Length: 41
Image 1: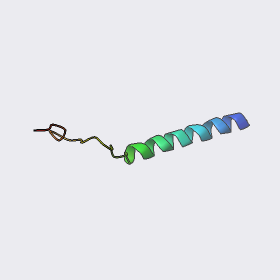
Image 2: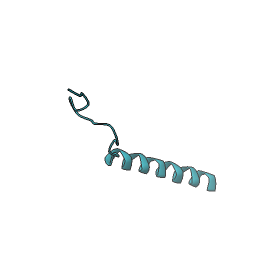
Image 3: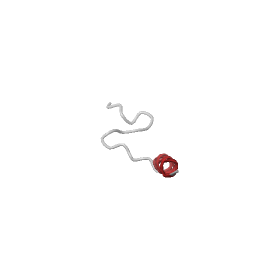
Image 4: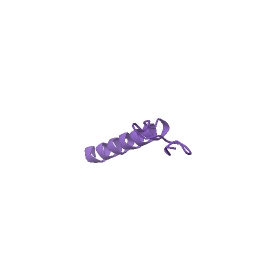
């Protein structure tokens, strides 16, 4: 029974981390994003 609870807790934590990272993406450092921003003229 304790193993089942542990599996559910670990699954819930993983889903929470994935949702948090999806809602708050880290900004890309050193790379310009966007249309035409990474082309040097």
